[in-house]
Length: 468
Image (cartoon, rainbow, N blue to C red; front, top):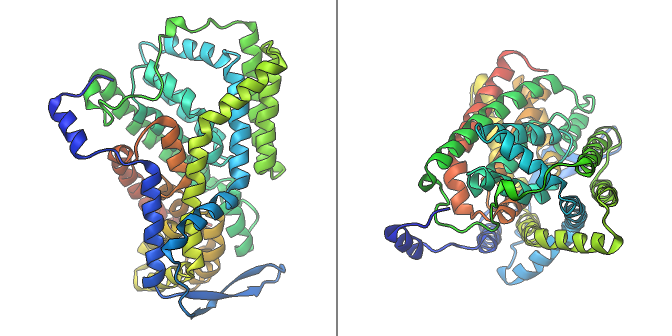
């Protein structure tokens, strides 16, 4: 990236970069203050026909305020790390396994192929990566893609793009599967079960949304990326040093037989992961072990000795530690809101507003409501468990199909995760790509506006076609 001029340098000094950790800690402080301002309340829980404890939609009541003292913020952060321990350890396993694969130089050889094959049409690299990550994201949560950020960053820089492009490619495409909800066990499966529907019922209409939003986003990212490649000064992160050097494609290794075998092992590992998550309900443990096993097999194929494997594993863990710290800190925000008993209050008031709008706008309003609620309840499964026992009866009363209400949950929970600064996944990706939150929002603010418009119109379409 070229150096900024004097005016840009003075502007950078006037508005210094704020560390991402400080942004999330400020959000945590705000969450603690909210517990003093928002009335505490909760829904009664009942046992449904399936023997599970669910929210009683008619059982909301206010309770005595339980404000969270900001003095205990460090305690909340510690609890955030404990709550996210499974994810953090899974990230270490994935990062270590990915680094083992990277150290065989097979990924570098593939990068050389992509960089040379598409040198005249570099945007094809973006399109290929976004489609590949998008398909893989259907059964896999986006957190698992964080360790791939460095590889995507190196390739984008090598093609003449910037760190924003790399972040956009990996963040957006690795989220579409979960956001559109075809096989999302955290939202679709939970909500469908509450509605008495088959596990992933209504998948066809969700696939239509997946394809549309993928095409829209590829167009938007390619448009920005090409503008930056032609005129680097138009980059939103112009003048900000990259955390990795792009390198010269000609200095990368040529593809050989061992590289092909390693890439085949990686492909088989990913396929196994997709099948496991789709059919066998694999979760954190199985995902981490699958990646680590794939890394070990790749290292053996790449003729690495056990000593080198251990070195690679540790190196991979080091690359992801900053992102793991962010995941732990960000979770503390939800813990503060939950301890203050204000989450159910937010749901109660938002649910009460829906009845005031005409039928065509009620579905978009439900999506908008979930977008607001997602600021307070960032966990997809947490939001499903809190909101759907309330919103499903509301949908029934106003004549909305349960499938449409669940789609509103998918989009409301999914899309806003890429603008909220306390989203642990977003901040972890940005840390891995070396992109500040403010810089990211210069790009993502416009893209989210496009997403928001799409989701609003798509929710209206669901009502018009009688989606069920």
